[in-house]
Amino acid sequence: MARMKVGLIGLGVMGRNHLRVLATLPDAEIVAISDPVDAARDAALAVAPAATAYTDAAELLNHPGLEAAIIAAPTRFHAALVIRAIERKIPILVEKPLAADSAEALNLVARATAAGAIVQVGHVERFNPAVTRLFEQLRGSAGEALYAIEAMRESPLPERISDVGVVRDLMVHDIDLACAIAGSSPLSVTAVAGSRLIEGREDFAEALFTFAGGAVARIRASWLAPAKRRQLLVTTSAGAYDVSLLQRTVSFTSADPNSSAMLDGFAPVQPGRTADLPAARQEPLALELSAFLAAARGEAKPAVSIHDGARAVILADAVLESARGGGVPVRPNLEAIAAV
Image (cartoon, rainbow, N blue to C red; front, side):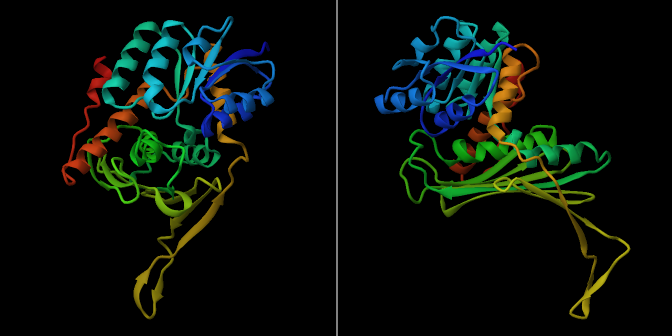
């Protein structure tokens, strides 16, 4: 298989992760990198010495023979870079969130659809082996009703983020996962959010999403925590899946209707039975990049489509709208995606 000529835009924390993993993939050749910071370019060239270095991302997209590009620049630059890549007919993987707001996201969907462009959005948790295992279990449990999704994602305040708040940076991961698990989009959103450590951007938020059929998702995101935590709990009619996104483990606890016990001599309970479900030990980013390269070669559709990315942005905006209104329920305008 010929190696695909790939360019990388943005060499911050996430860009450096892409660079590290790309350098190990046998079907990728890093031919161009870009970043306005001299030290960042120099460090990248130490990993990919044959690459051409650019200070201007737009110039990278004109690199001769470029076959695919990864956009890991700050969110405020995503829309312009995606549009330029679409015009150049270059398949792209753009880091989440797809765009800075719903209007930008819808514009990108319209342009990509009209051009037949290959655009994958970097919701890397979709490739977490524990999440993949969860999806396999849910697909194999026909007739199992979804009751609730609970997600918690928190960490100390990162220095790397300067243009979005915790909803678009952290919560957007679990918004996307909740929709993928439910297999649909929520009907309404109710949320609270606020700022304790930074001014002008929210650093904690909690939102409740209601789906057709009565399933709900409660998602919490925070930059106020002293340590990183990433947890997902999915409750169905058969039991509960407990997923550690950091440890990449998943377990399932089912109730035994034929077993009961007394709690301190009172209150009969049915103790659950817990089983660990093995998940592959693979790096999510490597899986994501391999899926993108397959899509860029025309061998598969983008694993996380531009429509998925736009939905996550629209729902993030609905969270912020509800929070600004003091927790008023908001009906997200997801019909707009199909209308463009």
